[in-house]
Image (cartoon, rainbow, N blue to C red; front, side, top):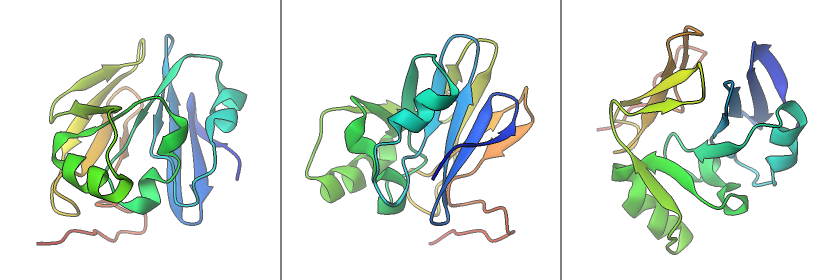
Length: 149
């Protein structure tokens, strides 16, 4: 696994079909999800940016949070807390985000959009400036949509 630049200040890491994203602004960076296999991805993040960075999870499915233990804290929609705690035995480093929250990386604002259906707290991340939507599992590049009742 290694970061692949997909456009300016944006990288993706493929972890057996699950994508981890790194987005950088002028002041900080954001890691989106930590993948399926659970390696410490921090060295990969630090290979593409020297900015301070935080972690945001699109949802609490195990294939998106396997490497969370290497981060001191993470952001996730509040509706995922119960699932995350049940899977991981509880943690106090959870920071909630909500629909409409904006994460400012410095000249790059990312909007959190709540899209329940795949899981109760699934989110997508809208980067208006870069014209990019990072969908987690609900929206796939192959056209599949993974939503459940």
